[in-house]
Figure 1 (cartoon, rainbow, N blue to C red):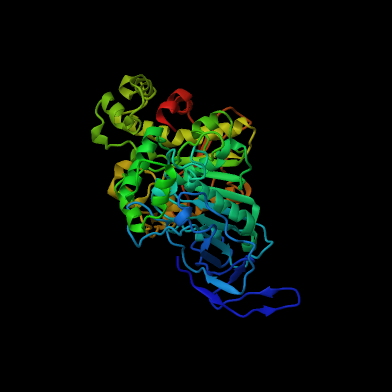
Figure 2: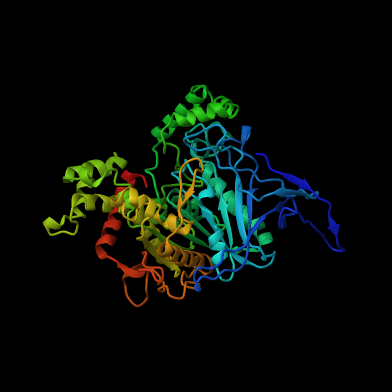
Length: 571
């Protein structure tokens, strides 16, 4: 990766030397220094919108050594942070490049991509101990980059100041190549590591622990966020190592947690063999020989191989005892093997409409629901399919659901997304955690809604409001749609809640004055479970309000998260 490095003379005081640059504010980490880009705040459009002052952005800050050559498919390696800066300042005014992703194109995305992006109040200095919000992007573990998820508004809006960070991590075949030839604890020891994309995320979080104080952040007050594959990443960071190691964060907000199904051993081995074959390397013989060939392959060969294997084939894999992901997340949660963190988990109300695997006109009979929805989990038995369908009775049969389509999308939404955020919340409550919150996002992305209204508040609708009207595509091709006045108001309300939770563990601590209080999921006064439903209203208020999670939904989620079901769905 090419970065502009400027060498400047230093001015020394009696006790220290301070680096400055005409490019912008400089943060000196001791082993390296970076010049950022300051942007003045926009004029507030509403008196209820606090602005703390200008924000400074630092992009493309490396957190690990480039994973090239022999470091392909190995855990990220620390930089030489014992080195002393010689006065060189790196231009960090722009985003770091995205990682290679699918569809892969030579020249779009690179291997040397393990970088962070950091936003801070311009006047924040070392020692300010501001809360830190870290975002992990989604994209099915094979696409997207932090460029579609700018944290400028989060930092600019929070009334007492926060520091924002986003992590770039290896994707697809480069981040999640599996199989018995890979892990260091295989018979051929030392060949590589599994789940290096997740290890990249952890390495970025550990870099934050070591260095975010220089940007004014508090390493003891870090919250992590992520949506879809990013939400699954958040859950896997919480369950990492089965909860046997401390986590480098205090709070977690997974949004629309997007899981699996996790690939089984035969699928993982098939994908490894295809990757080696398409790269042009031997698929028989020793693992050392195969991996050596793959590590010496050209970028063009890598790109060609990535494009010949379908999306989603490379994703996190279960490693077994001692690994970062020792078991399925559902099993780890069920057995209490996860970190005790403050939590705010939720989903979009139309997640299931995006993932029902069909459109409303395709669902006419019970068999359509079982065939189409369960195409995601072909290993689920007919007995379990019938049992699942019975939990979603039709209105015509004295049930709840008006149509087969309503059964289908509700089933898909709960099985893939809503029940996992509920399940982890219940696990944390069982451990005695108090700051546990839940939400349902019920405001659609206007651009996607206009294209397919039947999707409602479809998957990624929350991102539209949290990140400036973003609509993200592969290879970092992001577009942003200007908000209308009511969208702008909901955006400000949501960002206030999200950053309040990250800063204090209470999403109401710095909420907008007219927004309702967000109550914990479990109230000591009664045995019900509650969540905040966020909905768009007018340019002066929203329709956001607390709602009770129904007994029927909890019953359905208990079914989906039972061991006999997760063993077949592999979530």
